[in-house]
Amino acid sequence: MKVLAVGCHPDDLEIACSGTLRKYVEQGADVYMCHVANGCLGHVVIEPGPLAAIRTEEAEKAGAIIGAKKVFNLNVNDMEVDSHNLEVMDAMADVVRFVRPDVIITHNDDDYMQDHTETSRIVTNGSFCSGLNHRPRVYEAYSSFVPVFFMDTLAGVNFQPTHYVDITSQIDTKIRALECHESQLKWMSEHDGIDFADMVRTCSKYRGYQCGVPYAEGFRPYNVYPRYSTKHLLP
Image (cartoon, rainbow, N blue to C red):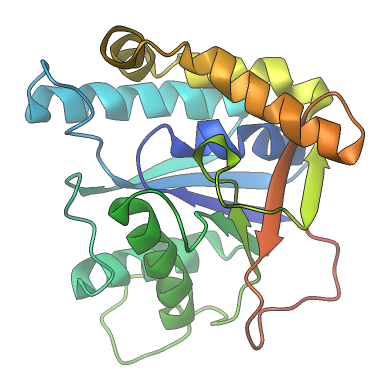
């Protein structure tokens, strides 16, 4: 099985679905991670250029802990993620063509910031374009209708899961992967007074309460024609 997880910023997948990604790896799946934005504005002191380089390195370290086969970086600047940008759409389509996934995980289509919702559209539209021939492409065309699951929003706000994944055995790996994003955890502690690793663990515990396990991650499917599947796609 091949899994493609696409987040906007370099730490978004670690926050919302890295327990599930690690569980996929442990069950023998090939997991690929991709972030659309480079995270260049995720600090008020470190300048955008150096910060983007730092966050790319942090994402690579986190991906290694999760066990991802590859971590893609589309390198769009923060607050410039635009689902109408055809170059980014083509790049996303080629990531899908390269991975040839059985399932894709990405942001909910209703989230707290524009970059996240635009990433959701880039993924759904880009995966559709992966099967079309009218745009330049690097890799051979692939199915336009890969099933997509939307991952949880930050702190679970305005998101009601329909599917849960038990990540009790993966919670410590999830937090270790998140802690690779040192620039963000340190900044959020200093700037916002938030122990972000504790917050993410608590959110996973809250989803666990909802489904009767110690820790869980929540998802809902992208229910449009013909993205349904007869296969059980979450681990």
